[in-house]
Image (cartoon, rainbow, N blue to C red; front, side):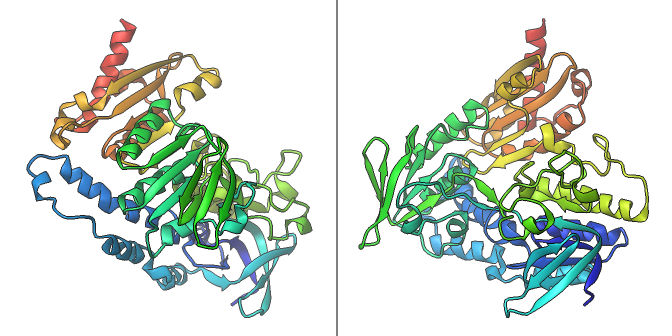
Length: 481
C-alpha cells in the first residue's frame, strides 16, 4: 500500500465512498481512511436500520386500511422478526461486503483514525496502535459526518442516554421509552418504538417537525397519538436521573416526572471534527467546515482554504444533513478534484457539473412517519423570508381518485409554493400514505424550474395519487382567475 496518493478521503461512509469512487473514475489514486465500519452511519445506525424498523408496522397498517385485505391481518407484529430483518439490513454490523466493494473499485482502504500532521499530510493510527503517514498530492476530503448532540441537562450524561445509534441497533424493546426532541429522528423513532410495543413519551421544546410546513407536524402529532405516543410539546427536560432500579426519571420544566427504561436524545447533531488535528493546519477543532459549491473548505476570508486542497462533504459541512445530499456533494467534489488535478475546466457555476447548487433551495427530504412527510425546496414561510412574492396552493390528497383506490379513508395534504414573479414552483410538501413516491416529480419541477404553463402538459396517469399535481395546478388557476 502506497503512502502517497492523489487524494485521501477521511471517512468511509456512503459520502466518502462516493468521493473516492468518482476520483478513481477520474484517473486518480485514492486512499479511504475509516476508523469504524466501512459504509458509515447510514448503513449501520441511521437510514437503513431505521427504515427497516419502521417498514413492518407500516405494511400492516397499510393492509388494515384496505377493505378485503384488512380481514386477512390477524395477530400481532412479530417483534423479533422485525429486529432480525433489521439486522440483515446492517449485515449484522459486518462491513466485509462494503470492503469488497471498495477494493473492487480500485480504492485503497486504510483502517484507523486519521489526524492532520500538516498540509496534505495525515497520521493514521490503527486499532493495534500501529501508525502510518499518508500524503496527498492533490486533495484531502473530510467526510467524517456528524454525531448526536447531548444537551446540557443536569444528570442526562450520567443516565446512559440512547442516541440514534442505540435506538436503531437495540436488540430488545424497552417497555417504556422517553424521547427528547421534535425533529425527524424523534418522530421516526417514536413511530417505530410505539409500533414495536413500547409506551413512548415524546418531549419537545416546540412543535413537531418545526422546519416543515405547520400542517405536517400537526398531522404527524395526531398519528403518533393514535399509535399511543404521549406528546409533551412546548416542554423541556429540567433534569434526568437513572435510579438504582435502572429506571430513568425525567423531570420536565412543569415539574411532572416521566419514567422509562431508556431515554433517547434526538436534539441535533455536531460535526465530527474535534479529534482530526485541525489546529495543526490552522482550523478550529469541533467546528463545521464551511465550503464553496465545489466543496472546497473556505478560510476565514471566504476564499478556498490554503490554496484549495482541502474539501469537506456530507454532514460535516452543515449544508444539508441528509445522506442523498451528501452523496450528491460527493459526486461534485470527486469530479471537481479530478478536473483540477488534470488541469481541465471546472464547471462550478450554479447548476454546473462540479457545483452542489441544489443544497441551497432544492433539498428533498422524507420523514418516514406514518403518514410520511415528503418535501422539497422552500416552505411558505421560508420563501417569504427569502423575499419571494409567492402564492400557496393546498389540496386534500384524499379527494384524488387514486387515493380512494390506494386505501379506504385516505387522508393527506399537499402544498405547492409558487414564485409569482417567475411562475415556477419553489417548494412542495406532501403528507399522506406513500407520498414519498411523489417526491421526485416535485424535485424535478423545483430543480428544473419548470414553468407552470409547461407543467400543465405533464399529464398524471389516472387513477393514481399523482393526480394531485393536476388538482394543485387547477387550484392555482382558479386563484389566478
